[in-house]
Amino acid sequence: MEKERRNQKKKQVGNGEMEPYWSETLQCWVWQYYDTRGKRQTLKQRKKETKKQYWARYIEIKQSLNNGTYIGKSEDTINSISENYIKQKYLDGIISDRSYKRETETLNQLKKCCNQFCNKPIQSVTVSEIEKSKEAMRDYSNSTISKIWTLLYKSFKIAYSRRIILYNIMEDETLTKPISKKATKKIEALSTQEENKLEKILLYKSNIYNTILLLQLYTGMRIGEVLALSKDCIDFKNNTITVYRTITRDKNDKVILGEHTKTYNKKTGIDKGKRTFPLSDKVRKLLKKHLNTKITNIYNLIFWDYKKNTFITDGELNSYLNRLNSKEKITTNLHTHRLRHTFITRCQEKGIPLVVIQSLVGHVEGSSMTNNVYTSVSLDFMKQELEKVK
Image 1 (cartoon, one colour):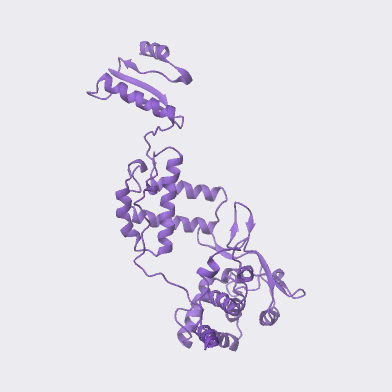
Image 2 (spheres, helix red, strand yellow):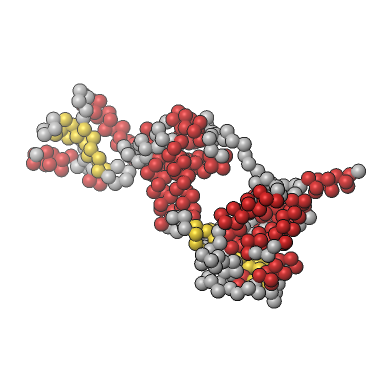
């Protein structure tokens, strides 16, 4: 053994690397080197492998180390890479508790679709295996598929950047994102008649739920933003309302009062959802009436469940709306987000400039979402516009 150590020192070259040497103990040729991650590796002569064949392998690896194409053996999997990626974003403060929970749910969906290969070394995953997993992905909605596909792509991109794989197979020209078997559900705004009927019902009886829903219908705020309003958000002197945070959930799904709005960017520290906009006469009247009641909760929130001494949640309001809709037959599938859609659509129909709508509802300026997702045209409005061409 001592003789082998002396031989190794004689064969040692630059940076501590050694040339292959004959091991009396192992009775084969051995080469020790450092891979691209600084980890010491050993290349041993295989059984029945000639010296010439072994030397060819040695030269091939050495050349790949020199020209940057070396790929060492790795046990990293899609699952382990994705888990670490999501966890690190959370630890770095890039994503919130709520986002961490959502991304973890996406990873669980990826595991179900790709269970045949997500726990095998990523180096051995093939395009064919990914193609086969696409059928399981198609059982999800298109929005969920996009999230799964993005996370899958990211895991391969990370593996490529860390020299775990030589080629990102997600870049394969034949590999395309699957399309859901489910029809994409489009959230439609309420028609003018439906909106008027709902407004009349909500105005008929004064209670905290009705006030919250009317406020959303009149302003287009996200329901979490309405529920996070505090007394300091309302300025009757300047006739404005300021939105700067939302009710959200932590990674354990516990309801919490967030520090920012949904569109807060942790990387830049910019919250483009934070906004101040004028109070309409209806909103001013609604808030004046509600604020006559005593506000005594620890967060000074305008809306609070005093019976349970806790936050009011979007789930409670959606359940309330569902019961109300079942009784009054207002429309199909009524929920709080349709009220936001309705406000944005009415603004569009009245010709309010897009940049103003985006400022009112907290969309990033220039975003296509305001037009592509949130607005639709009511039948009444189409009839009204057609009258112009008669």
